[in-house]
Length: 407
Ligand SMILES: [Zn+2]
Image (cartoon, rainbow, N blue to C red; front, top):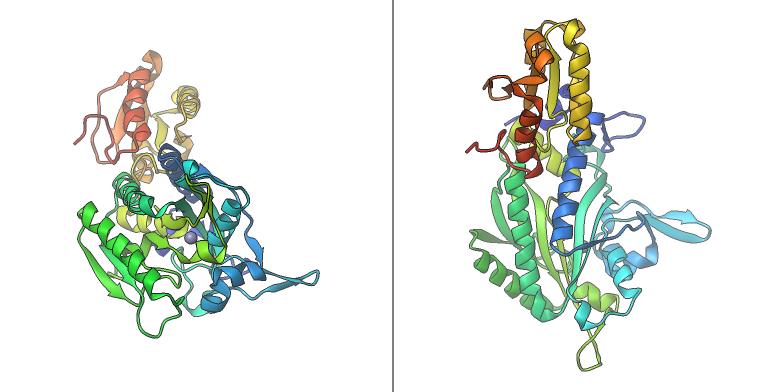
C-alpha cells in the first residue's frame, strides 16, 4: 500500500496552501476527475435504489443544533458560532438536522414511506491543527449522506438494502472492508438518555448484520450520540482503521424534530430515521482509493482513461481526432505528442493510464488503433470504433477489469 499524501502530490491529485489553511485541501483537475466519477457513481446508484436528491445549505442557526442535540453532545467538534445580525449561525457538523427539516416541511402519508433523501453535501469539523493531514483528517468534509424516513416495520429492510449498496460500491471501487463493526455506547460518553431506544436500535442492527451474513464485532464506546450504528471499517497502509461507511438507526431525532406521517388510521405516527453513507466522505474514499491502487485506479475512475500517442508528428492530427472522438463518447482522453519525448518515454509516463492508443503511419491511414494496456498487454491494431467499444464496456459497467471478457 502507498501513502496517499505523497502520491496525491506526485500525481497532481490534490494539495494544500497555507493561505487556504490546514485541513482544507483543494482538488487539482486529475483529483477532481476521480472525485466527480465517484459522485456520479453514487448518485446513479442511489437514484436506481429509489433515493431522491436534495441540496441544503452548509450553515444553520444555533437553535437547529440545539434541537438536534449536536450543540450539547458534539460541541467540541464544531466550529464556533458566528454572530450575524443578532443571530448565531454555525457551520454544520452534519446534514441530519437539515434533512429532518426538509422532511418536516411537507406532510407525509404512510404511502410515501420509505422516503429516502440523499445529498452529497459539505459539513465541517474543528479538528485540532496537530492531527490534520492529507485527505483523511480535514476540517471541510464532502459527505455522501442520506436519511431514510420510514415506519418501524421498514427499518430492517432499508438498513439491509443500504449494506447491499455499500457492498456493491466496494466491489466497483476495488476496495474491501477491513471489518464490520456494531458500534454501541460505552461508559462515560456523551449519549442521549433513553435505554429502550438504544435497545431497540441495537437489536435491529444485529438482525440486519446477521441477515447479511458478514462477520462483525460489537464494540462499546463508538456509537453516535443519538444511536448505535454499523460501521464499515477500512485500514490504511499502517493498519490503522477508520470508518468509511455507516448505517444508523435513529429514534431520537424524529422525536426531537417532532416528525410524523399520517398512517392508514388517519392518525399521526412517528417515523424512524435511518442514516446511511455508502462511500463516506469523498476525501476519505479517494485517499483510500489512492492507497489501495497506488494511482492505478479502475478504468471508470482513472483521471485519464486513454492517451493517444502519435509515433511521429505526421500522426498528430489523427491522434487529436481520436481524442475528440473519445471525448464525444464520454471518455477522459488526452493527446501526448512527440514533442513531449520519445514514444518509449511517453508510454512510461502514461504507465497509470489504463489505455494507451499508439498511432503509427499504418494505423493513421486505416483508422486503426494499436492498443497497449496498463498491465503490459499489447493488442494488434484494430479498427478504432471496435477498440473504443471494447474499452467502453468495462468503463460503463464500472468494472475492475480493463477489457470485456477479462476475468
Ligand atoms: Zn445523519
